[in-house]
Amino acid sequence: MQLPLTDPDSLFEDLLQDLPTEVCRMARECKALVRAKKVKTPEHLLRVVLLYCGLDNSLRTVAGTFTVLYEPITDQAVAEWLRACGPWVKALLRQMLPLLPAAVLPGGQRFLVIDGSTVQAPGATGTDHRLHLCMDLVSLEFIEVLVTDAHSGETLKHFALGAGDVVVADRGYAQPQGMRAAVQQGAELIVRLNPFSVVLRTSTGHPLTLGVGLKRQHAQTIRTLPVVIRSGDGHHEVRGWGHAYRLSAEQANRARQKCRQRHKTGQPQAETLLLAGWVVVFTTLAPTVLSAQTLLAVYRCRWQIALAIKRWKSVLDVDALRAKACSPLAEVWLHGKLLYVLMLERRMRRTLGDRWGRWDQDRVGTWWRVWAMLKEAIAPLITGALFWPPERVSKNQTGGVDLSRHEHTQGLRNGCDGERMATTRTVSTGSQTRGTTDHVSPPGDRQCHLLFATHRVLLAVITA
Image 1: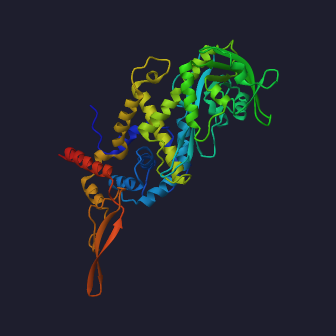
Image 2: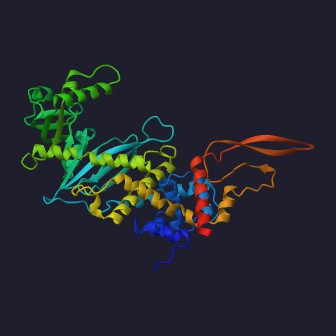
Image 3: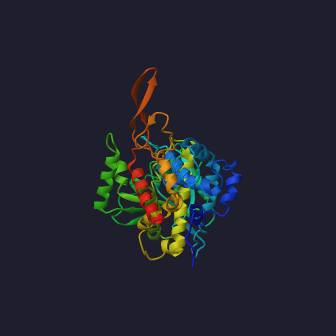
């Protein structure tokens, strides 16, 4: 019979089996843990990272949790520790990828879906960071994850490809320079074509106008054309085939309506509206290798990576950056959040089996519900709330404040960020005593109050 766990560190070790085995050694090699002061072990430091990045706790909440579990620490000290974790967290993230060897089809090829997403800092009106992602289309596992600033756009140059790789990407990656770089690495391409961002030519080098060549095509049919994609300066060139599928009249009208809505000022050009009635996909695979019908079916599967990104944002708030853009804390949060996401995915596959989430298997459940349940299940392992000593919780609720200094606070709880609240203190000036009103930050966060109330109930049940 297995004895119940009696301390938070033993419970936290359950998370380590879903992380690289060198996690402790790497912490010292990356100088994330040089001198053990308040944070004494790599496991304690990893708990701080997961509290801040995984559970999205504020610095003050992380400090309060650490104080209850181990010893007093300030939110400024937590921020300093997190800033030092940048190289360590990035190294851990690289070790997490790929989770498993990418699935190779019988023909010796593996299909990789590439896409990107954006992250905004608090109060931002535009893009602050970009995520560049590469997923195996069969196993639905992420092969590469890259974080850049807003100035690095979508391009295939970000990814390490090789012979046998077939890249599936949307029209944002239809750039001659990036496509040429992928082909030089030995990869094949299946990319939706944006005819207005590239120079199109026939196989003999003559200019190619798609609107003229496709105008007589019947609806819901496919036409294949040999094309050459060239950059504007002529330095980059990619040869292949363009498969053009003409939409039905109803589908074409909806596509043209969306095209008009995207133009905030003026009207789209006539050729733009005309080509909105087609789906044109460029590929370097010959029609004898992959037929046009099969290729378009493969391209439609690209939405699996879009669903994964949406799941990350909806369930795990990957796009809700908690720090100032391009700051050291932002870098740690972004890479730490991705580390937390991949840790959840490893745990899910370890619990339910690897074949459960594969695209070539029958669907047995929804990812959304499993991810939400796993998120709630590992939260107590990270916070250690089941082992919070009652006396430390009571002391931490008052922030360890010495109330004998004529400073009386109402409901001060170190560890909660929220609205500013007024506190009254008595100030003696000679023979007169007057009251002044100060504004302090804590508490105000309803979620934090609910968290404390829940933990009190858990502690009462445990100690009963």
